[in-house]
Length: 277
Ligand SMILES: C[S@@+](CC[C@H](N)C(=O)[O-])C[C@H]1O[C@@H](n2cnc3c(N)ncnc32)[C@H](O)[C@@H]1O
Image (cartoon, rainbow, N blue to C red; front, side, top):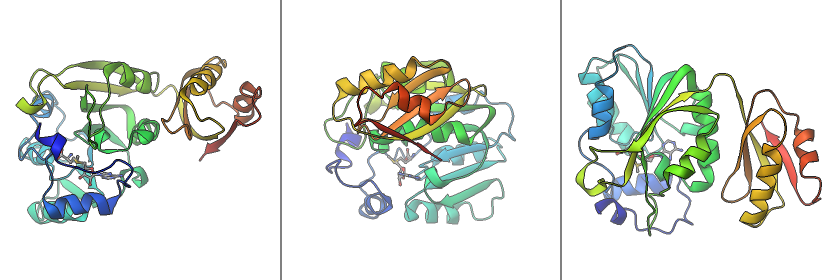
């Protein structure tokens, strides 16, 4: 698979702007399809409201945005942390008022969108950021907003891309989003055949989604015990911990006091939890 070879790098390297910019400069961009991703094209064709506000994070060369523009969409925002694709897109669409092109970090971005399109952005992030991704997506979506696109349903020996499974994603997005679809993708490009899921999630407006710093855990067994303790608190609908044990995502019916969380894990004084505002 071409994209497996595209980023021969240890995942211990920071996947920051410098890393991504270096890939664009060196043209080691094996993820770049050179055309709109067929499953996203099919999905876009089902959207009737051409004025929907649409965000594409980690947009790269964003053939998806180009397709949206061709189809008459009028309110598109794309963001990428690497200067090269952003400069190229600004030149390509310089006279087009229907697209806003931003150089910046998705996690710092503010706004409200009806739809956010996922196309090889999630898999480009270190897996430790998955809880933060869910939190940020929930924050950026308008009421009734949707997150839709593609996720890998496989693992990789060399990353990025970072893979995952349907089961993992269901656990991750549980309660913060309603699942409209998450199925094997039938029209992936040939090198990704049978390895992608097409998903469409609807923001759950009824819940609070909060992140917390966590310390004191060094193994996944303890992680399981701790998240189970949190999940047992009345009002908590989902609790998950990042793979480096440093962050907890809590989805709840109402605001949960940090002291309630701390009490639930008071059986081990090493465990400390602190809200991230
Ligand atoms: C694997 S590439 C995918 C690009 C594009 N979506 C595509 O399919 O061709 C991942 C992209 O995410 C961008 N990226 C990584 N971290 C980011 C962040 N925190 N904020 C915005 N963009 C980011 C990278 O610069 C890169 O362009």
